[in-house]
Image (cartoon, rainbow, N blue to C red; front, side, top):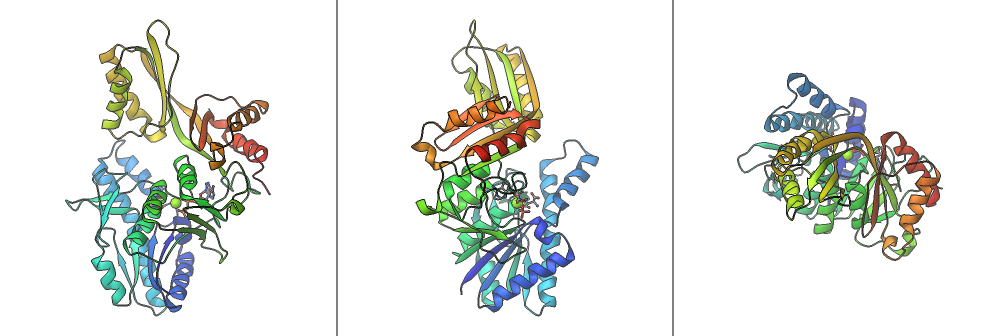
Length: 405
Ligand code: ADP
Ligand code: ASP
Ligand code: MG
C-alpha cells in the first residue's frame, strides 16, 4: 500500500489491445489499495516515424521544433491510456510533462530534469485519480517543451518516483529484466536478479538500452530502487539498487554492453603544443557533443593524431567543428568512420582482478575480431570493433566469461 510509479515502454503500449492490458494492470494495482502514477512512452515506433517525417521536411530541423514534435508521441499514448482506464470504471487523468510539473534545462533533445513541482500530482492523488504522465518530456523556464533523449521516459519515471517519495518504482518493458547482455543477441544469457546502480549506469551508458542512463543516475542520487520487469508477465524482474550481495553476484563480469550507434572521428596531423587537445575538446563541449573514448597516438615529429568516438548522429557536426579548429591550428584532415561498434565488459570484480583485459582481448583475437580503440575505467573495458563483428564479439565474450546458462 502506498505510492506506486510504473513506466510502460513503447512496445508495451504499441496497439489498442496492449493499451487495454496495461490499463487492466494499472487498475489492479489501484484496487490493491495503491495510489498509482503511470508514465508512458509513445506507441511502438511513433518516435522513429516522427523523426523520419521531420527528415522529409529538413535535414537539420530547428531543435526546438523537433522536441515539440517528438513530445506529441507520448501525448497520444497518455490520452488513450487514460481513456482505457476510464472505460474500466476507474478515475484517471493524463498530464503532459509540463502539466506534471517537470522542469528541465533548455538543452533540446537531451534536456535534464532540474526540478519537479509536484503540487498538481499530489492534488490529483488526493482526488483519488490515477495519473498518467507523458514520458520523455518537460518544459524550460520559458515554457518551451524539451525532450530528455531517446529512451528518456525511464528518467521521467524515476524522477517522478523520487519527487513523490514513492514506495515502488517499476519499469515495465518487453524483456523480463536486466540480463548480462542483450538477450536478443544471446538468448541463453543469464538474467540478473539484482544489479548495483554503478554497474547498471555503466551498462546503460555503454549501450544497454533497457534503462536510460540518466534514470539510473537519478535512482542512485535519490535512493530509488528500480524494478525492471516485463509488461507481458507477472514474473519478478531485476532490482537496481545500491549494494548487491555476493550471493546475488557470482561472476567477475556483470555484463556486456554493445553500441552500434557510435562513430569514430579522427583529426590527423595535430601540432603537438600545450593546450591543443583542450582547444579541440572545448569546441566540442561548447556544442554539447558528448565525446566518449579519446585516444591520442604517439607523437611523431611533433605531430599527433587524435581520435574519439561519439554517437553516430553527432559525428557530422563534430567533424564540422574539428575542420574549423583544424584550420586554425594547422591540422591535416578530419575523417569519420561510421562502420564501428563499441563492445564493453562491465563488472565491479575488475577492481580486484587484473587479468580481465587480457582475457577479453585474447577471446576477441582468437575469434579473428580486430580491436581498434581501447578505453578502460575502474569497472569497464571498452573496445571498438568493425560493426559487422559486433554481435559475434558479444557472443564470444558471453561464452568466455561464462555468462550463459
Ligand atoms: P522500452 O520501449 O520498454 O523502453 P527498450 O527497447 O528501450 O524498451 O529497452 C528494452 C530492450 O533493451 C530489450 O528489448 C533488449 O533488446 C534491450 N537490451 C539491451 N541490453 C539489455 C540487457 N542487458 N538486458 C535486457 N535488455 C537489454
Ligand atoms: N519515445 C521516446 C523514444 O522512443 C522515449 C522513450 O520511449 O523512452 O526514445
Ligand atoms: Mg526504453
